[in-house]
Image (cartoon, rainbow, N blue to C red; front, side, top):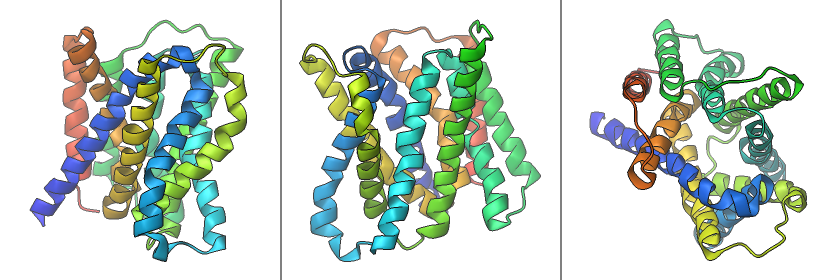
Length: 290
């Protein structure tokens, strides 16, 4: 049992590392593609890479039409809508604020578990999550922020995005317990690409993007969305949405780690303290009894 849990925790760390690496590829591609076109291409390439596996491996387990409607909705709240909300928020909020706001996803998940499943909020779990949030705060720090209407609206949209992430995990656990991970991932990403399609005209490039940017977008789609979504839904099915969404603690840590290794970015003592708290929190949450 312990060996199985260690393997699951390894998958959790792997998901954190993959999503953390997405920041590298975003930096490469964002200038030439823009946030909306980049987001749609990202989920579209992820959908394309998973679709053949669904057709040839999992097609005997396809959901009925009523489930397809739900999966379309699920794709909107776990990818399309939060991608757009965070893209808008990124124009007015520093990345440190966005990382801290995003780290509240597991706290929301704990709250919605109480509503949807009538699960009691355990004090130890809550304290473990707060340690993780504090770790993220120390890790990313806070830049100057001018309070105005745009920053307040951006903050509101970023919080709504985290609520979407949390609700999608809860709904997956509640309404799709028997649906395969491949099925969930493929239809979720496919519906997200359809929903985001009209937004590509906001960022349609005037010149054809470079090969380097295209490669970054493809890796974002195949690895950071396709493979990552499979891991994400698998973890939700095994350990539940609260433990799975604590991945938001480790994502900025891995993002900075890859930036330090590959881009020569600065790593400070405060970051080391933050990462230590994040790892302690993740370990405490993940190995708690449900």
